[in-house]
Length: 129
Image 1: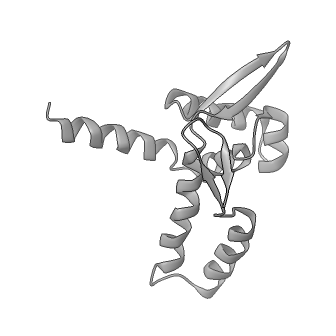
Image 2: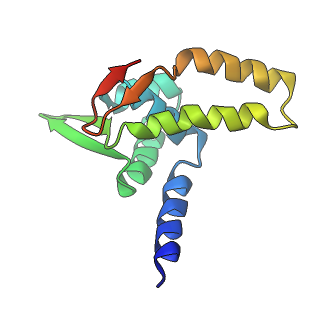
Image 3: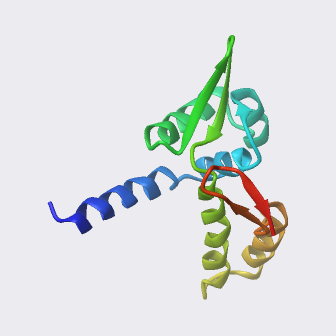
């Protein structure tokens, strides 16, 4: 199989794992550190089973990992840089010609929640710009 096909299939699978609004929200919730299922459930306002199903998809693509501490399981981003991808994605949403003014206003509000001022270092730590 040619290298391009291998790489594009992997990239398509990665983007497919991110192709649900709740999974994007989970990535954003994990941007600043670990969270457990209950915390994610409260943030997303969906069932605990729903959060677990979305985490399963993200774990399968190695987007999130878990850490067990007794009976508690905490989730974190395997590569925190992926959260920065989503912020860049806001530019595409905002620049779409069919974007309604309401959508543009929503993007502006989300930008305040998802700042671009953080650079991720290769070791998963952050560097403020």
